[in-house]
Length: 408
Image (cartoon, rainbow, N blue to C red; front, side, top):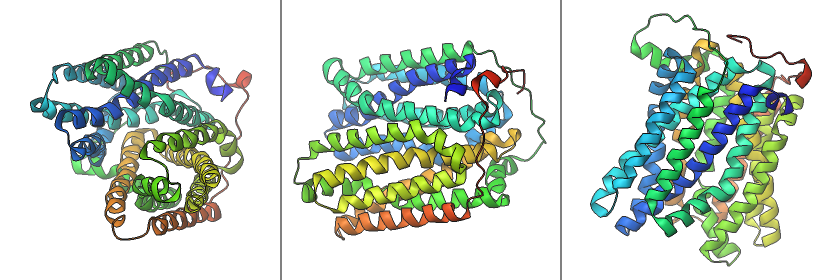
């Protein structure tokens, strides 16, 4: 990772996104808490999460936008729109204003889809190909680190000063991200683009995935894994109650332990990527996650905590390998649409698995759901480990990496 941090522009981008991620993690949980507080309904709180992730199904539209416009100005504009939009929450006062809370949550989710695709595409312009995995590992580590404390900090600020205070804090982090983006020196070279009908542009990302055997295998395998990974949103409460005989609040302890493992996974992901290649590290990450989940069947706190650490390590390995594979196997002109297509293809099964997990929890023993998750994740991991091309990348040392020339 030192090779990435040796670059001035990379440091600026990482700094801005670290601050923005802290604000995002705090605000995500507050959306649900606020809806629950205003309405007294658990369903209303869950609907807030759905409002955030729902726009993912329209991610291909954002991908077209990313590939039509310069990425850095688009990220700046997205930060500005979201920074102003989140301040609309200052006008939420009672139950009759809950619609505004949901509207801002939808805007938040849509903006995140556009920004994530634009950032992924921009990284391929800003960094040499052999440093993309290291950059993805840094962003994953930052995200997992923020997950440890930002949601609790946001909830505490909400309890002490109200949702408006959290909105102001989040808007400030968007402003800091925007300033860091403005300060970047790297220039983008316009990519030639063929004039196509809107439908052809919308489906270009999916068609590219289908045409690439390796990318098709990776995306399909990850999408299958997402069909069961959402079960954990439900069976974790059963593990706490029936397995460990702890109160629901113990969920925070387990989340923190898994977060520690995820930070370790993020820190080590770039080294593993260089040794194994993107496809194999994604497979190993899924296999580790499956093994860690399997330990949750055992009604012993020590075994459960060890399993969560293993699962925590595996998750960022899978994400870093998956993201890097998409970036490396996509041309510059298609980066936004391919990223958006993979986002939709992966997130949609995950949302379905959350809903199915909630329904299955009333019909089957939670240990059967854990077993199904572990088996599917393990098999998906084995597929990528056996079929992986071994495309490990040798990273140049920081003192041999050239500064960013225009259009690199």
